[in-house]
Length: 199
Image (cartoon, rainbow, N blue to C red; front, side, top):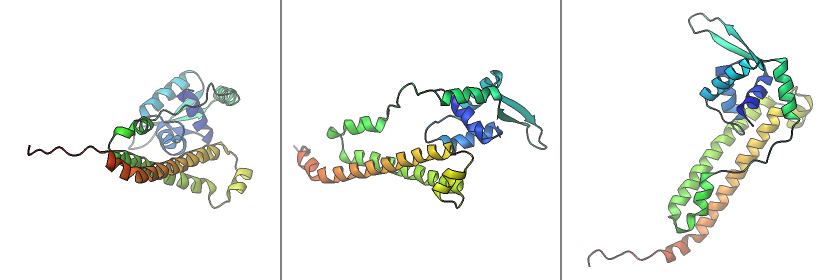
């Protein structure tokens, strides 16, 4: 999938500037599709050129003019066709930390623990952000009420996937720490004795 459809889907929320879209990507789409502001602005230009989105200039006093983007009918048709097409292939995990864990048996257990602690802190931060977004979307309603009555539920369902992923990351980190703690005495026994530097 290209950034194209992530941008078109983001514009289902309504007209937005490039800046607003980049903030939306940071908060609502970051759990499944990342893009830098530069990538986003390039894609907006391309989509406008293809007639899938429309741009209008908003004049501002004391600030540079800004461009506001909306989805066109052609863009909506393209997005609808995309949404009905099966994904090309399931997502594969590509994670450098997992390679490090795969190779950890000869490494310093303290270094491995530090990497896992860092991942857990990262996951906890993302989970806290996603839960704040969920609270904002629900606005005091229960989840079932929201899913029954909201105009759009797609953003909420993708948010649930992000929440589940970070909760799973935290469970995995806890399990790795538990294994490292249990194996610590064994690692101490297997460590070669220090060389006597006085000889």
